[in-house]
Length: 332
Image 1 (cartoon, rainbow, N blue to C red):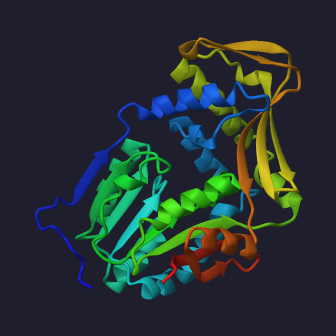
Image 2: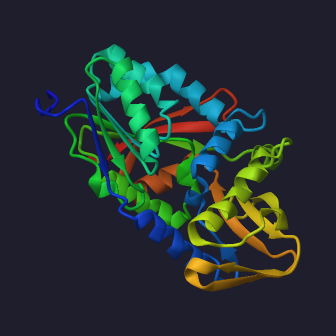
């Protein structure tokens, strides 16, 4: 199948679909999460500019194996993936700086099939900078950026121009509760035609000590990353959190086989979220859950894919089986 390309389309197109919805989402999530008996905030609000910078530092830490392991798998298998998929375009959910994705772009470019890259991310400056860089690095590449929340704006991803890979890397799928995870995978499946594939990164079940160290590093970078969500609330919603009032907690939940990150109040106090006119009271030792990160077995992943109408094509791991990439497609 020849790629369907509009000859009048420019090399770079950026569509923004936020229109204040990100701020509304934050307010709604805070109102919902901080008025529950067990307080909770969704991890997507970690990633302001400071949060993104801290996460980049986390990825370089010796304890944080997922980024290194996933990249090693990509470097070893990208040529095989390009040949298997014959993809002319790559759609990336939560694209960030596209650092790991370049391995796959290189392979598609070398195979002579690469035509378009579609990054989907909430940070417009990052998408624009990435588009400029990639169109210089890959002659003839078109970039159609989608500025939006991949949980709410998947329907804004442009129609496929040919066989596509939808990439959802970094183990981010583990941030969803099981029911939400399967619903989200069904929404991704709706982007896939019979020639398309989903490439997804999943962290694997392993020794709890290894898992907990990855989320509670010796330098305290992850602790700072966790507390940074409070600074986001202070800036965006006029809250008056003191991040030093909270300890960073990371623990493995053996029942659910996931890591939980929490913020534990060091003292009894009340914080005001002015934009919501919402007082939030904390007991000494009370916790706010800020992230779950589910860990997978092949059987768990197969169950999730099957529930979303997808079938596994390839299961790829690093030599130590710390992390996995799965390639799947819609059940024919």
